[in-house]
Length: 45
Image 1 (cartoon, rainbow, N blue to C red):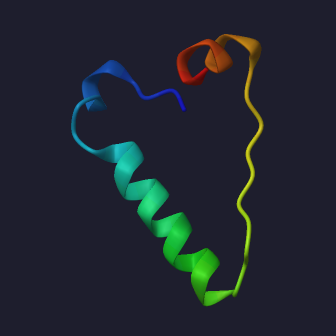
Image 2 (image 1 turned 60 degrees about the vertical axis):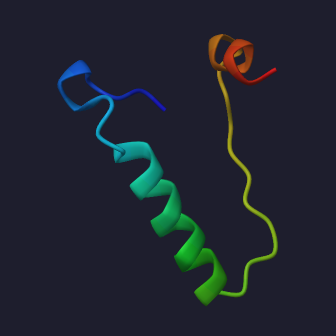
């Protein structure tokens, strides 16, 4: 996830992911998936 430099290090992504997880639980979703660019994969592998 790309965050503008003015908003980095403020927990923006963490807050978004928490909200996504809460909503998924409310909807009784068992799995969450996402798509990644080749560049992003370098950061998580």
